[in-house]
Image 1 (cartoon, rainbow, N blue to C red):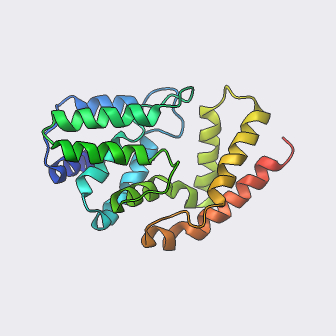
Image 2 (image 1 turned 90 degrees about the horizontal axis):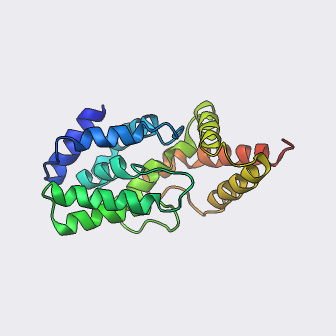
Length: 206
């Protein structure tokens, strides 16, 4: 699936990347500090995106943004998205994409900071795919929560619980988790149920 996605993304975007870029990205996604932000996450995102590419204005760029959106991941830093977006823009230009396409790709990766509502159709689709894990079946969602905890294993339990609870409560307070109607209809209710359940677990005595 990953190889097919890689070829499709560049064909639709209209670029030809350096032959080693694919391997460098895969190596990044396999870094040992990752537990959630791994090839499992990328594979799950691509599986969700593929049948929804009809919603995109620039489908190749959305798919490339998925490949790059967690390409740089260090939980001790706050600039992962910026560094990932910079890498995406540089790779796009080197592959022959226009400056405007590279700019759009950079903006898409930056949208996965989740600090503002996505404003374009492509960003809405990308963010919905990235947040689809919130609406996963309970068994997968619970695995995701354990994986996130493992990435922050260096954070004391009481601090982690408080901060994670704040993050999830912020998500739950949004009027709408998913911007596209397709993802909203499919995942909104289950995502809210997962968030409520996880917040309750984080609020219980350790």
